[in-house]
Length: 300
Image 1 (tube, helix red, strand yellow):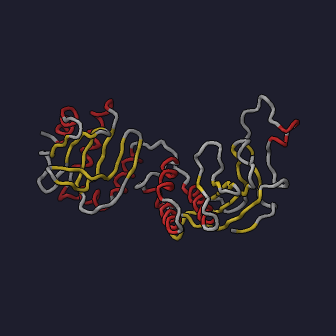
Image 2 (cartoon, rainbow, N blue to C red; image 1 turned 45 degrees about the vertical axis):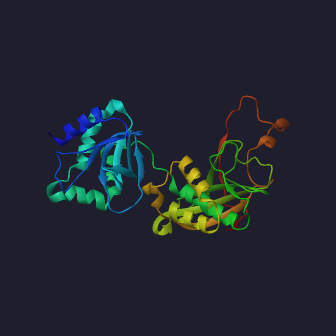
């Protein structure tokens, strides 16, 4: 039986948490077809314990510990939850498990799993936009700065109605850019610069560089100063940067860091900007650009 046919048969016949060794593959290059609570797919054993977690449309590429033939081992999995594409998905799974001439394909996947994944994701046309890693790094760097002097500091970027960073005595918004010149920022909503506590705006100018820092690098720094790692992981997952995602290793170098007090002299559009100190009844969203050049700031 051809490997692709054996995989398709496995998808159709296996029960949940069932697995079957693919007999169509050479003995020296084993692989399994399986069904789990999360869907169906194929798995390769990996000797080295490492962590990968990538998603693309209906596919997931990740590592997990599985019990096969009575032994708990580490595996690299390619799986999906979408039953409607089960027949087509088997083709990609076949490419994944086929060892190739002298095992070259298998060796290539196990030595650099991310490279295989990125190649196929580009081939099938990834329509998802590149996540702005530098924005998250800037927020985390500001979090380090604040947490070291105020343990009440909390990263709250995705919590409704909050600023990027909240402390007991003040709030912080973080903006970043990869443009080498200029310092314009976008205020995305009329409530972003509203505040009860004193509000500070942190600004970072960055560039992609192997000499810079990554999300994972700054996470280690935050953990070293005592910030709760579980809180970090929850916030990163909310923003689409789950643990094991390769994009968390992308590095940026900080070229400039500024801090502005959002006081009465800071240019902004808030309730007090309108007659009666309230927004016009029909206005539901305000977005505007502020040029930070020429506004007094301190470095941080």
